[in-house]
Image 1 (cartoon, rainbow, N blue to C red):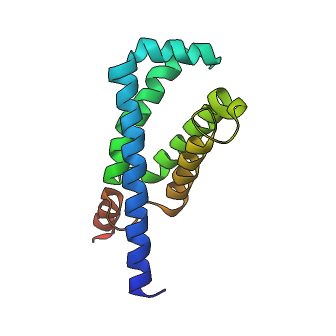
Image 2: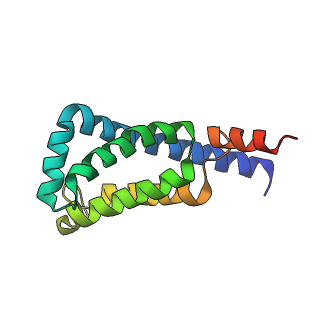
Length: 140
């Protein structure tokens, strides 16, 4: 692989990471400040999500704080796994019966699941806090 190909791949990962992070952070913001944790807990309960009182603040925190961390490129791989599990839960509990197409279908959640898995597997790319931390660890 030449330098131009690597640079394009890093730019692609940057774009994927930032946009995915923005989407998750916005949904976390919505859960905290528009729906409220009580509203999210009630919604999760209505979907049959186990331990909704614990799951609601956990998911809201993951989405808001994790989305911001993803934008920065910090903890990208573990967040990718957590976000993929989050979307698998959303598909299973909320969207599977709605078919493929939005608003009731799985297409949006499936795309976020795939983006999250890509980031978990490929990592954050060159322009990320994770990479700066790795580079500093390698210094003598």
